[in-house]
Structure formats: structure tokens, C-alpha cells
Length: 220
Image (cartoon, rainbow, N blue to C red; front, side, top):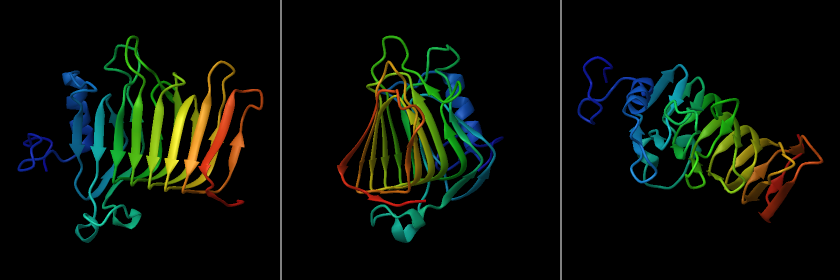
């Protein structure tokens, strides 16, 4: 691909996800009904990548695994750096939904404005998904108790979460840090997963930890 002569099509792609994200941000027209999808080819992409609202980043898998279901070893797209959710097109009103698939991220995946993922005024609750990804650290704080983060068939070393519902299925999490708030609820619904440890930063917070189907819990 080329960031100078590419046009974002399969025949003539851009070279970096950073350019694609910048163009989406500049258009400022992604909605929940009409989101953008950025297909990222196999290889290593170095540098931090901003992620606009209502955008899905989808990496590549090895050809021999592409149609055989989720397999973390099949991930063929690596981002050596951090990925962070941008505020809602510079309005300061928050970040809406989106998702990550088939990506290995060496650093943080985190929300804008010091981890906050905000629901803009008048918007529906956020749903964000992470599927078949390997990420060093996920650090997100929803601003709305009804918002949901879906984590499926992924490997995350550290998961720091607060506010909202976090549904974790078929994943391996090294450590979960549940950060509570006295006025909202943080719920981690965990099933069919391997969890190293779970800690609570605030015992006074309104936090619950539900095992819908008991996961394997290791001591680390």
C-alpha cells in the first residue's frame, strides 16, 4: 500500500492504519448505523494508532486458519504500539462504539480522556467488542453503567475496567483490576475463560463479579 498514492480500496490500499483513521476522523460522518471498517493486512505496523468513533479495525489471519474458527495463533496483523479510542470527532461529547478483531497489540488499548469512553448526550449506550485479539493491556472506563464491552476468544495480559458490563467469553486474562465508583455499577460477567487473578481497587464501590459459568481461576 501507499499513503501517498493509495485510495483505500482493496486494489490500491493505504500503507498505514494511521492514515485511514485520520481520514475517518476528518470525514466525521461515521455513525452506529453506518460505521467505518478498516481492513488491516498482514504484517507489523509500528506506531500508535488513534481509533475514531463507530469504527472497526479488522486484522488478518493466516490463510490456513481463516475459515476454521478463532485461533489466537492465526493472527497475522501486529500493531507495535498503542491503540486509543478518540473522543467523538473533537466535540468533547464522548466516544461511541466500535470493535477490534484479529489483531495483536503490543501496548495499551485504552479510552480517550484518561481511559473514559463516554456516551454522548442523546446517544444509546455503547457496545464495543474485542474478538480474537492478543493485547498487552486493556484500560477502559465507561461513563455509563449500561454500556457493554464484549471480549471473546482473546488473550489479554492486564484488564483494568470500571463502570458498565464486561462480558468475557472464551478468553485468557492474566489479571483483572475492577475499579469501582460509588454511583455506578461495574459488572464483570466471565464464563468459559482462564483468569489469573481479580482485584478490587475500592471495596466501598458498587462492584460485582459474576461467573456465569465458572472459569478456571489461576493464582499468579
